[in-house]
Length: 113
Image (cartoon, rainbow, N blue to C red; front, side, top):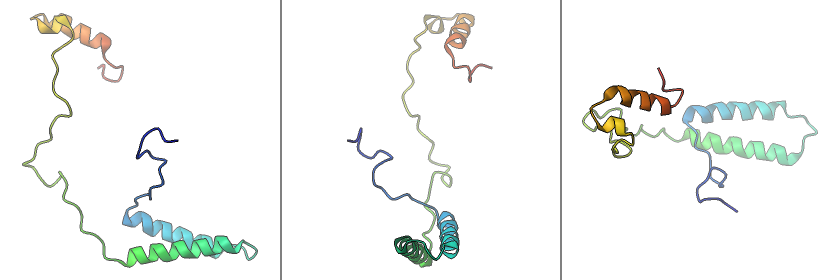
């Protein structure tokens, strides 16, 4: 039973980059070469099949890189959520020293400086 649809354990192919596929192809060819003569034929067939699949994928021309946000300076990143009013009463008023101490008390240890 799945806790939610699309979780990591679903039967979904792992997406690999072209370099990772090339490395995997080299590894599989090495495994096939070092396979002992008494190894199960099913293992040998599976390796040969996967090598052929990877080889066919790598023979296809590489896809052009997708346009991401890196190239676009005109599109600012939107905040993930809207700013909320402060939950500390000291921050709402003019007393900044109390606001700083209240915020630092409840801050994460990683964020304290």
